[in-house]
Structures are given as structure tokens and as C-alpha cells.
Length: 268
Image 1 (cartoon, one colour):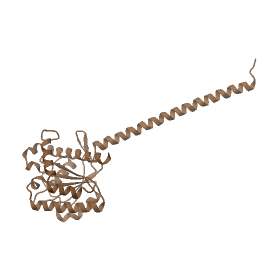
Image 2 (cartoon, one colour):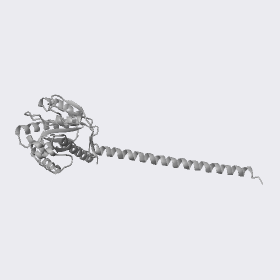
Image 3 (cartoon, rainbow, N blue to C red):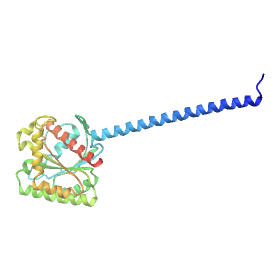
Image 4 (cartoon, rainbow, N blue to C red):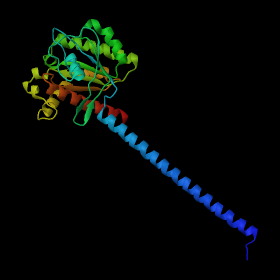
């Protein structure tokens, strides 16, 4: 017996509604899956960026190299700048007379990379302080170079020059309201102890250089620097030698470790 038209219509409507509900459920499921995939993608991106930041703490940074060149004793700025820019040490020393901007070669040292944007290498002359002031405004990080052999001599002229420069730098930083990390780079450690000529990224001399850094850190002059600079910036000390490419790599690697420690503290 044929079904009444109204019954047929009801069955068709139910089937249609059921199909629509199923389609809607599929769409919602697909949407949830797409949202989950997008969430996972964003999480992977965040993790990748975090790893890159941890492994490349200086990525995209502008680093300023300054420090006193006094009595014919260069502090090592240009030597390290050349190494980081060209991958090798200069065959002969040439004093930096005017500000020089250098690109940076990407160094992969163990699990970290030195891939700063550029190095601003300033002259160590007192006459170039106005240029230092301008470069500080541009820089993200300051590397202030001192010679450890001269520093440990407690040379009054050398200490006076450092105190004067630190006073100026602290004033410029305060006026510009900048809080970039401030690295004291202690060079020429091999002239204090010949063992430091054999520094490499990982050898038994690591503890010995740390002991020297601790010794330098406790001196009245460095404590005074920390008080003046530390009001806005955190002061880090890295000592080493630039006698060979191996020692230059060691210094670069230890700078990266300190930079990683600084940025981890400031972002945690």
C-alpha cells in the first residue's frame, strides 16, 4: 500500500536533516582538526624561535667595539673585529683611525652561533669620544676592551684613562636611556701567563681563565665600573687571548655563553 505523501515528505525531511547534521558535524570536525594543526604549527614556530634565540643570542645585534689605545698598546678591538668579520686574524696590526663598520661572518661554535648584524669598530683615541657617543646610540651591545697585562700592572695612567672613559659611557647610556649588556673584554692574557696561548674551546685551561676573570672582577676598578654602568646595563667579563685563531675562537665561544646567560635572565 503506497505511503501517504505526508509520510514520504517527513521521511525525506528527516533524511535531509540527518545528512545536513552529518555534514555539519564533518565540517566542525574538519575545522577542529585545522585549528589543532595551526596550533601545533604555531607551537613549533615558537619553539624554533626560542631555540634560535638560545643558540644565537647575538642574532641581528649591532655590537660596538671600544676601548683605550694608550702608549702604543692596542686593546685588541680590531684584531677580534677582523677575526669575526673575515674568519682569520690580521696578518699585521693597523690602528683604527676612524670608525669602521664590518659585516660579521657566521661562526658555528659547538651548539651556538655568532651571527650578529655588524660590528662598529671605533678608534681607541681620546679624540674620537664624540664618535663613541654617536655609536653608543646605535649599538645593541657594547664591548669595552682592556689589556689584562696593563690592567694588572696597576698602571695609574691606564686606570685613570679607563675611569674617565667609563664615566663618559655611563653618562651617555643614562642620557639615551639604553640598557644594553656591557661586556668587558680582557685581552692579551697570554702576556700574563703563557699557558693562555693554548686556550681552546674546551680544554683544561677553562677553569684557569675563570679564576683570572674572578680575580679581575674583584678589583676596585671593575667594581667601580659595575656601579657606574650597572645602573642600567649588566656588566659581563670575558678574558682571553687573541694570539691565534684557536684562542680567538675560545674567546668568541665564551662571549656567546655570557650573552646567552644575559638574554636568558632578561627574558625569563
